[in-house]
Amino acid sequence: MTLPKARPDTVTQTETILRAREGDARPAGASTAAPRRRPHRSWSDIAFGVWGVLVMLFLFLPIIVIVIYSFNTGRLLVSWDGFGFDAFRTIIDKPAIQNAVRVSLITALISAIIATALGTLAGIAMARHPGKWVWWFLGLLLLVSVTPEIVDAVALLPFLVFLGQDLGITMFNDGIVRLSVGSSLFATAVVSYIVRARLVGQDANLEEASADLYAKPITTFRRITLALAMPAVLAGFLLAFTLSLDNTVVAAFVQVSGTTPWPVYVLSAVRSGLRPEIAAVSTIMLLLTLVALALVALVLKRAGDSATQIARTMTGG
Image 1 (cartoon, helix red, strand yellow):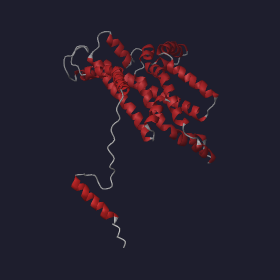
Image 2 (tube, rainbow, N blue to C red):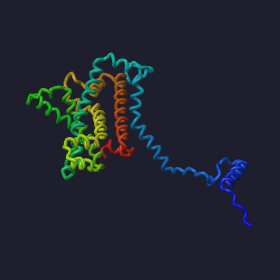
Image 3 (cartoon, helix red, strand yellow):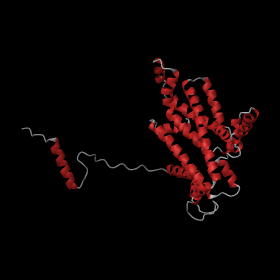
Image 4 (cartoon, helix red, strand yellow):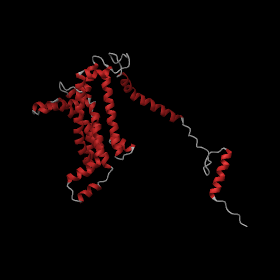
């Protein structure tokens, strides 16, 4: 005589009841394996972690200090009198500070536009027309990137004077134009790296298909190539804007009276004593830079890039 087999749901219910009586709250059929223990951290992992924290403090502690002292109500930055917003109110009352900040923002915007236009075309050319010339061109861009700013400044000053006075091109006598041209040199190289890094990893199948469908070259460039590179173009524009805000050495050489940018104003203000309003404007500039960098990451993330790809694009890797 064969005994009837118990149904699976009956066995599950019986197992659940027995576990409940024994005080085991795990569901029936759950694994009875012991919980995995966290791996023991070695002394080298702890040492590298502490070292990383110390490096971060070394890099960011001066910035944190200047942000804190921007809320100082004292007359000088080094003497803390109390917490307040007097330094930020002083910005509104001093036309010289407002003019310096305005010149810096206008210069950064114009130089970002110049760098984006030139760097985008250069990056697309290097990505879509590879050859030996690309490595020579990359070498020139690298030379622009690593050349000390003092060399660029010394070279730019007589060149701009020659264009403005000897050749009679009056726009090069304007301080905004001089600052914009000087600030756009390094930024153009950065934008070229970013746009090239964006397009190198993408096939040109869409552009070839557009050409096969008898689209005009300008239509293919506008609707296909530029659309593919647009996240990198926006990222390059924002990075060029932030880089142009603090181009101190070049600005100190090529500036014209009446168009003093913010970094040069800070250098002149330090000689008579660093005041809290200097730290206040620096804090505002820092926030503006962080917002621009956050927008860069957001644009690239919405384009589908991973964190690693975002870091590579922003560094031109």
